[in-house]
Length: 133
Ligand SMILES: [Zn+2]
Image (cartoon, rainbow, N blue to C red; front, side, top):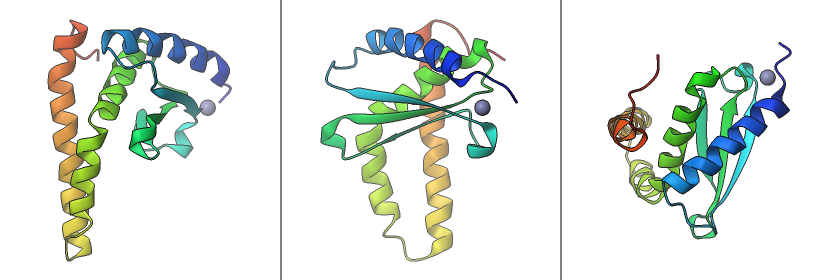
């Protein structure tokens, strides 16, 4: 209650700019930042989505209650999701072809877990520190 979304957004945009440089993101990428309350995003502190990929238009959602010492980590994580977007789309396209709803759901979840693990493995190498607790 009462978290200033605009202030979180300003801080997030500043960190995002730094992370864009660190990850050498091409200038043509457009990354929009949206701050959401926990009830709008109960399952994660951050998420990344995108429109038609060749347009390089990405949407970063962050929860307003992200602890500020985690903000850089979360933003770097989501930026990496964007980098892996072409791969994620390919995989999801094939997952959609699975015959049953259960198989789709399980594979979708596993795919998310695998992406997560890859990113969390690589982030300490890029950022130079381990995930803050
Ligand atoms: Zn809020």
